[in-house]
Length: 322
Image 1 (cartoon, rainbow, N blue to C red):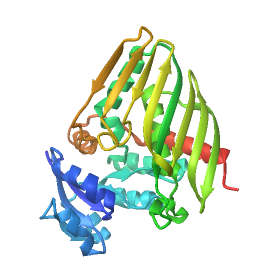
Image 2: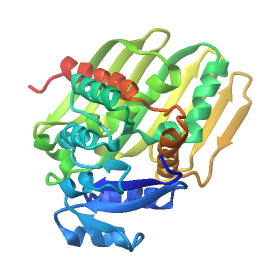
Image 3: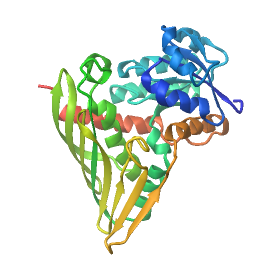
């Protein structure tokens, strides 16, 4: 692997044009080479920041010898299919979350990753952000004392029924869109898995729009609320017997609000950890490249993604649509 990882993007999504495309273009050790799309007009937004971008079909992009890695921001139900195609074509792959619709689908990707020796991962950007890295360190250091309970809230209001997140045929719904963060972040930070899962889900047009989840992990209780029909809110609270640790903009850091940790101790002292200007998508691309070039461990493996998807599967099983 050369010092520069040459990237292609499969699909001209708004998210790719706004966030991941610029992140790949600006990341150290990365070069954005090509965009796969059937509509050249959709490439205009990408060429605003990457004028030399090549536009071609998906199949031609996967066959291109000058592409080392592929980022896949396609609709949820297409993630596994195109990740498999990319790996079969000899490309390393970074796939937008959720990487699959069910946990057992990820087993196929794990097997293909192991067989090819390529890097395959879910684009789970929060684990690359120093606020989450520090949160995990604080929990492991016992900064909150004994962790007793975790509360998570993640909501936004999207009533547009033509939007892909409100369409069941493309794997829409709030849990797949943002529950993946509400569940996976706590699994990653604590290193624990849920033992029991209960859920109440409000369904509309075949997708979950609001979900309340209760779970019991080995050493703490857990509650999470996700919604696509409420005003924007994001917060994760780790409540111990000696302190409370708050992650105030846990998922859309800097976009929702200041990326900050607040540690409130039982002696009434408060410590703030701030990370202004951190670009988690850029860090994600750079860590992917570092893994390819130097063999560094990637922070979010397919096995990590599978654990979160298994929890999502359990949530759906606990409250299926009526």
